[in-house]
Image (cartoon, rainbow, N blue to C red):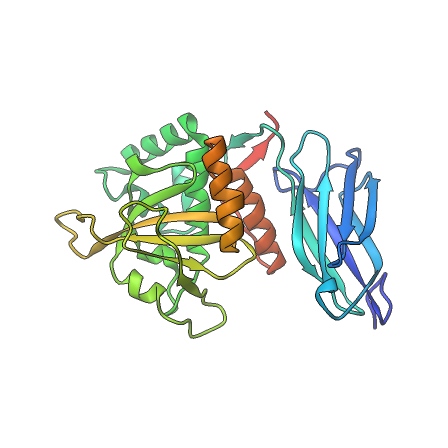
Amino acid sequence: MAATGVGPDTAAIRIRVFNGDREPFPSNVQILYRCFDGNQKSRFNDFRNASEVLLPNLPVFDNFGDNYRVIVFTKDHEQAGFHPVKVKAGKETSLDVLMIPNDGAYNFNRAPFDGLSAIDPQVPQILSSDLATDDAAASRWTDRFERQPPVAACLLNLLTITANTSIAGGRQLLGFLRQIVFNRMEQDRIFCWADGTVIQQLRQKPETPEQVRFVKADSSLHPGATGSVKAKQFAEANLQVTFHENDQPPADHPDWTLLELDIDYFDDPGAHFFLEVIRNSVTKSLTDPAQVLALRWMAERRAGRDFDPLYVIRPA
């Protein structure tokens, strides 16, 4: 039986829009919905006082024309969207879109130090392994998210992604991490010491579909790097792991290797260089962890999973 709003030769897209709390917008908020097919022809362009809209009876072409593009906009929020939304005849496709408030404020109420185990039980140990007590680690973490919210958000993004990333051999990537280098954290990347065997595992071919494939990546924009790999998982917001094998590890851990973790907005190398690297160089801006959150959340939802780095973004 065909889904509601579709015939045997048409498709439908159900769009659900969420705010920075990752909750549906209330019904008194007017949202502009726009939808284009893969031929760049507009198929819907209208306002609705609803956080969920069904676009029915969309044409199906059985070629690139089925790669639809969806854009949503509402007042005081950054425009958001997703591409490609692939449609199939007789099927309804769901798309969840996250909109970040303009000049939004990070809220870490769900991320006290003793609550970070919600990401993974290993996280508190990774964040405290260079300190004598958990109290010292908790104080350092609180100071970081109070003084440098974007840096703390970047760290939570990357810890959540590594916790959710299974690599060749079947282990989660987070399980290889040993110690965060707090004095080298930025809002667009972190450095951490890791079990040195992780490099070989990241270069191996996955044995199962659940394991994420990593491919060789350009390391020229990472000073001191000895190599780099990038996850081939989503169209946007993929993890890049860069190796710094020439950095001297702590004396009591000679088997550790320094890793640099960051997220690229775009999977395509050209788009990454011209739309992200060049823009950041011109504007002197860094990759925005709020945008990483939105892009990764949408990509994970498309894959049927959640992405919860324990912070939200609310209007300032």
